[in-house]
Image 1 (tube, rainbow, N blue to C red):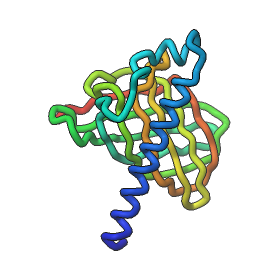
Image 2: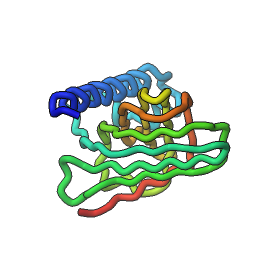
Image 3: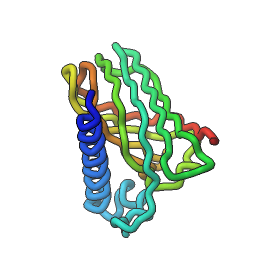
Length: 171
């Protein structure tokens, strides 16, 4: 892979990640004011380009045939005391897929505060190559962060569960 291809791919990933985050914020803003989504995300009501976010990138692996496993390690780019946030989930579901990819995106809350159980959604489509997005939320549905990337593998699916686990790795 040439340096130009790598730069283009990184630019594409950054654009994809920003698009996914913008779409997520738009969905939250368009939710009925008395809905769980709106109530859980009141801190994002005034979200704009000046809002603090924490950039991260890493690898996402998701696979399963009835029993699935998801693993993701996100290295932080702008917090010195946090090396990475690790996300894991597994369980039974209607799934037959295997993807592996690099993802980039942002945490909309301080990543040092996210350890513990979480909800998550992965949307992916790949036949050798494709796209994937990962959204992480608190157990109450408040947005933690959203990430996107170019997927390699096979599968077209949306997984949405509440059995995720986040671990903060100190630098």
